[in-house]
Length: 248
Picture 1 (cartoon, helix red, strand yellow):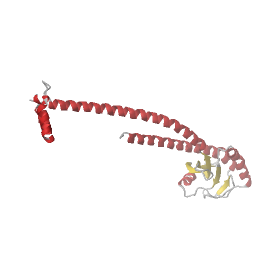
Picture 2 (picture 1 turned 30 degrees about the vertical axis):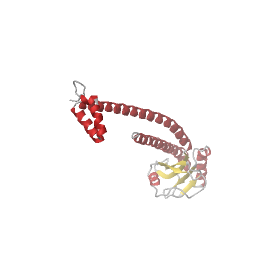
Picture 3 (picture 1 turned 90 degrees about the horizontal axis):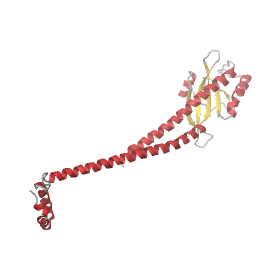
Picture 4 (picture 1 turned 45 degrees about the vertical axis):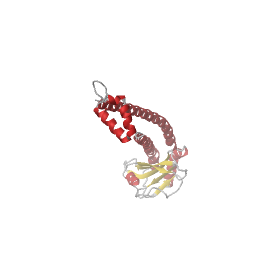
């Protein structure tokens, strides 16, 4: 029973590791996808725009055409293009609020050229999660960061693969821990049996003569003491005990 505690703790650690690996995998995929969108679709459509001043109508149309395909196929749920002051200069749904605060470490990291991804709750789904990526947008000519692309990507497919992987892991982990538990039980039973035999042999050797095998004085003393505690009836039984008569 005591071995169940460490086995349970081991199972918990291993399963939590699977969840963490899946979340990390989703975030890495999100960063890679955001980098492709920023480089292949967003940056060419901006045409060296100054995001601090906003976008022209032509730039907005070019950006919408470049990103509509990803939005239409569902690989991107929502997107916003923001300048370093935090203002939304473009969004797929026309909204200009509700973005990540500029005080957020992830936003500050994106302004200096480093992408950041995290899992967040999806307001449009019941208890679902989505991947939020803040990806820097680099000017094609200078290679410098000029804005921050805020993307929200689906996590449901990754989560589905996670549950499939978890089902396999449950069976493998359960079988492995079951075999380990049986092995520990067998070792415990064998060790306990050996210790009991050793203790019984030691007790027998301590109370019997090694040459004749008859009970020795220590055995007689213990039996006499036990009989004394039981009273006259016990002493009568000791006198009648043939093994006691052979004590030396």
